[in-house]
Length: 377
Length: 133
Ligand SMILES: Nc1ncnc2c1ncn2[C@@H]1O[C@H](COP(=O)(O)OP(=O)(O)OP(=O)(O)O)[C@@H](O)[C@H]1O
Image (tube, rainbow over all chains, first blue to last red; front, top):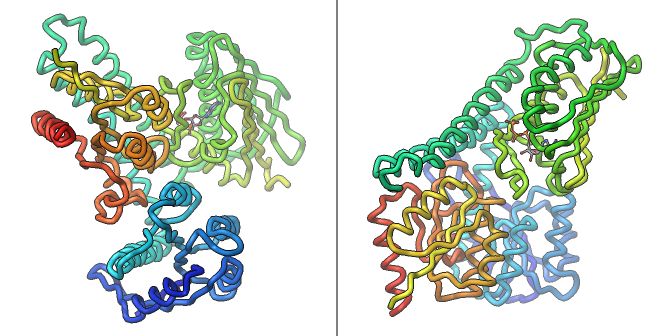
């Protein structure tokens, strides 16, 4: 049996004691759980008192009223989020402030319970949360062994692979039913879209191959002294056809020879991805400038473009597996959203860093630092 | 003369949008399309559809939900279908099959994306009849 700590912050004594009473003898037990849970309830009548208890007692679950005498519920939520505390927050709100509750969920609240609630409503909400706490514990355990990451990755991957298949299947069905009439040309759009989705799947598969190279690590790695400028040249030559199509100038600046201890193929993956993005997300007639400099301990690689740029709020997301930023400007660009994730993982294995600065509509600049032998300061 | 009913379809997969549009138009409806929560919100300010079919996950994992909420606030009588398919696979934190969540998400119907054509028509017709009665 595990006990979860619940903190209730509400200024109405009736609500607080009601919750305590309802949950006193409540237990959550599921066949799939290794253990049952029961609950220990603490109460606070103001946000200030609540925060103190949060600090000292570290509750697992917080039931939070928004309308409080001093600081408001959302401020308590904000506090928890800023401190990145691992607490599941449930807002207790009246139906009238549903809007606020919706906003609160985007600020990190997990759920909301409408007021007034029946004992059953409270119990089923707590039951859900308990399931979640349990799953979180499980995933933490799995994460330690690397299993969880693989699982999540696979489930997103299966979705990413299924989406184009569904779309292709849908078009094929439309064609089979001759939905656009007997004229073959009427189906051109559908065929083009199918080809585009197939292209997307192919990119995804190629990226996956790169990714397995990265994550399988060791063994296959061949670390030796190489000249990064050569690699950049190769990458630029590979990308030349794409840049010509979009009328984009590709320039290489900096030192002529920059030696580094690294695996050739891995460095190619980094350059290929950064340069191909700089072309893909560029505008017709734009430029891509790649600069490589070494200073004894450290190599700095800059890839700058004059493209569509990235919104500030998206900057941190782009290095995550499968993340693609959707916007009007990028809607016709295919990609798997894996490229930068792979780049980041690779750079991490070299103890290097990657940073991005960007101005929407003006361009982006990716700065990579790699230690020549030892980690850069 | 009867005017065609307008169905709003919101989905961030442009191909799904195209296919669903073709299908719904073959049922004799008019369509209104949006590729994101944002686009849809702009659309509904100007036009009131007779029914809406929303994808659950768009820009964010709960875009469809928020959109549904906002639509119901503006047009409580317009039936909303939430199309799912992705939710179950990707393990999002928002569990659509959960009774509690369904209560909050005031959608009139949840449908699998792979649903058969005849069934889809039937469901749309049912919701439209219910609304008019
Ligand atoms: N140079 C850039 N300018 C603007 N946006 C960019 C740039 N590079 C990356 N992005 C944004 O970051 C997202 C993630 O990029 P990433 O390379 O990981 O994936 P992708 O380009 O979608 O797919 P692929 O891995 O197939 O290239 C892109 O969807 C894009 O929105």
